[in-house]
Image (cartoon, rainbow, N blue to C red; front, side, top):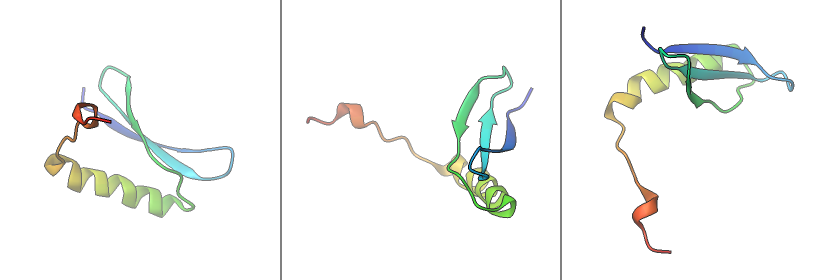
Length: 63
């Protein structure tokens, strides 16, 4: 089963999406959006940009 985006509305009335893997585990949770349209735009942005996203490992940098 493929991953799914789920749109919810929080206690403050903001829209959020979470990305849920096929096994039911949450992969990511978005920031709050004031409109549902903005939330959908956030989902579209993840869809467009994630395949090209790099990985930055800050645990390897000295503090």
